[in-house]
Image (cartoon, rainbow over all chains, first blue to last red):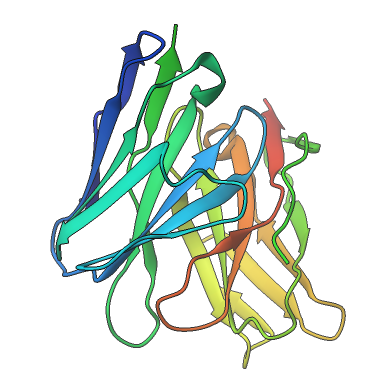
Amino acid sequence: GAVVSQHPSWVICKSGTSVKIECRSLDFQATTMFWYRQFPKQSLMLMATSNEGSKATYEQGVEKDKFLINHASLTLSTLTVTSAHPEDSSFYICSANRPGQGGEAFFGQGTRLTVV
Amino acid sequence: GESVGLHLPTLSVQEGDNSIINCAYSNSASDYFIWYKQESGKGPQFIIDIRSNMDKRQGQRVTVLLNKTVKHLSLQIAATQPGDSAVYFCAENLSGNTPLVFGKGTRLSVIA
């Protein structure tokens, strides 16, 4: 079964509104989670690293005030897309590495965001 | 540096044939490599991984080959089936709790 759960799996929102996406690690504690964005027919691009109890680290070109990340517990990270615009429409995916040697990455199911 | 997203190349194979998907990775310091399968509208699904101290690793119907000299990774799928149709991504990882860097992906189409 899934070890990283992402919710919702799809959402449609109006321009100017905000959308929150949740990422939960189900059977391990994740001090770090990663948020990726994937546009159609393209690869996954890292947006930010979510750190439990501290500020997220954003990749170059990703607006931290637009993509708010909160990692308030060891099993939950949230990504909020604020004042969404149609160009924010994309597939958002989170991942977390299982602690220990190897650190296999587990991915959420992804969230399809459509801004109309 | 990170791989840049590009439009996906496509590999078409006949059902029952073997498939070989190639990937060039970017960081010679990477020590962990993974192949993922992604079906439409879903998140990446782990297929097989390999560490940098190995050249080859086999799974069920899949084999991953690593050539560190030329920074090349390949995924071989034996007896390709229609259910193998998907986009395949390679990913590299430095170590520990760091994010994956994904390759550009290859769309595999299986012809019945």
